[in-house]
Image (cartoon, rainbow, N blue to C red; front, side, top):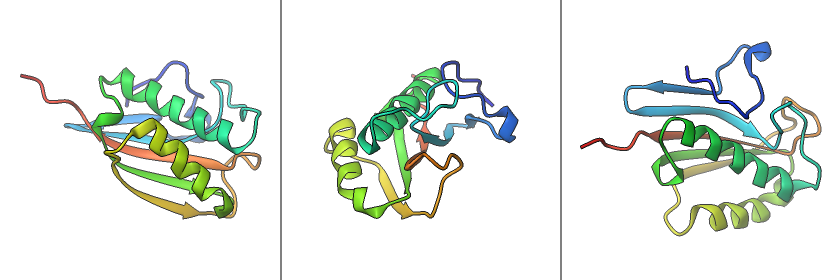
Length: 127
């Protein structure tokens, strides 16, 4: 388990933000929340952008970047926003995105959250 300063404390909910097992990095799904667990204002795009910010912070903590992400699963509470999510994801990840899935769900852990993104990455090879 890797503590990730700057992200919401997951311990009250009994999970780890980031777990490294061998060369693999498993990052808990990140909602558009600040470090205090408050959903950011500004609507769906702001939440998606903050989710990706939180992912970046966690990946950097273990020495990775988005280029090391193997798989990404996005959970959204309203599939009408799928196109917007894909656009933002493409802007952030570029033309070589990881494997992925987009799942519509009824609700997330925070009722006011509309998106949560989970990733699996691989640590960069060391010479």
